Amino acid sequence: MRYVVAFVRFWWNFIVGDDWRVAAGLLVALALTWILAHHGLAAWWPLPLGAGLLLVGSVADEARKSGRA
Amino acid sequence: MSSSVLLFFTTFLASAVEAVEALTIVLAVGTVRGWRSTLYGVAAATVVLAGIVAALGPALSAIPISTLRLVVGALLLSFGLQWLRKAVLRAGGYKPLHDEAAAFASGRAEAGSAAASRGRVDWYSFTVAFKGVLLEGLEVAFIVIGFGSGQSRLGLAAGAAAAAVVVVVAVGVVVHGPLERVPENTLKYVVGVLLTSFGVFWAGEGAGVDWPGSDLAILAIAAYVALVALGLTRSLRRRRERPRLVEAKA
Image 1 (tube, rainbow over the protein chains, first blue to last red):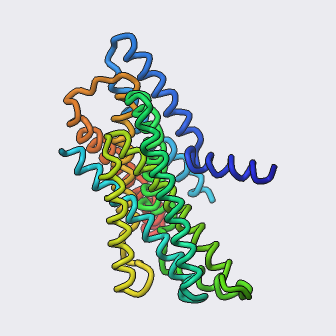
Image 2: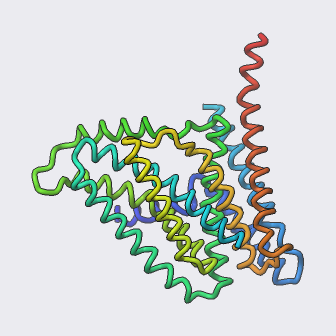
Image 3: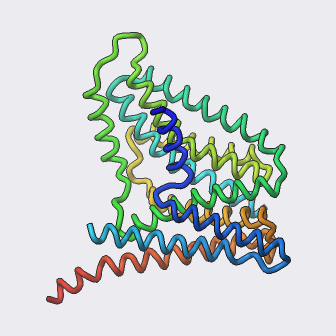
């Protein structure tokens, strides 16, 4: 059981990293892109916008936390 | 053509950064405990990594290209934002820079204090070198597989990674120590921007986006990601400087 937990934790850290909200936000941006593209609407903007916003949000949050420490 | 150059450049830089970190671990163990078992560990990890690339790379070519680009793009985007997040925080002064000299010193201290091995193989050296090379190399293996299968250029991506490892090891042999002068954070910053940009482009294509300007859109995305990251770094630096300025004025 210990090895399974360690295995799952390794892959979680490897793919998701320090901030799970970034990964969750990317999934939302990806889903929105897919929906727009499959309805024939302009779909090029959610991913770049999402990546930028998620980076700013995650970095600002971490900076706030370490500023308080 | 331009995307092939970017592919080579990104894979080379990502591999070089990870190779510098792996080299520090290997040097620390090898210089303290001897080279034979350490090099066995390096060789075993290299075989595992090559096996992962050789097995997964061609297997992925059986997946439809749009699905592949969606999955690979999402993974690259996740890796890219992780690299960029750390690089921005380090450049902004909110996270300590990775110090190869300190990592080398602590690796040597740990290797020196571990119990001596009695058999022909020193399992401590083997395990530390194996783990170090495997863990540092795993992300590179995924980047090679991702780039290689996403653009059907697995050979080029693997060649770029191998070239980076050869260059880093050669420089390490010449310098005879950890490569502490390599601007690791700057490299991570650049790789973060490129991985994020390719991730956005491929994940978008996989989800059905018709990018304005076709392949050239990658350059526009890279410029945009770089601008966001640089703006963020600048604002973090200003924020860090502000209390000091207030103190100085008081």
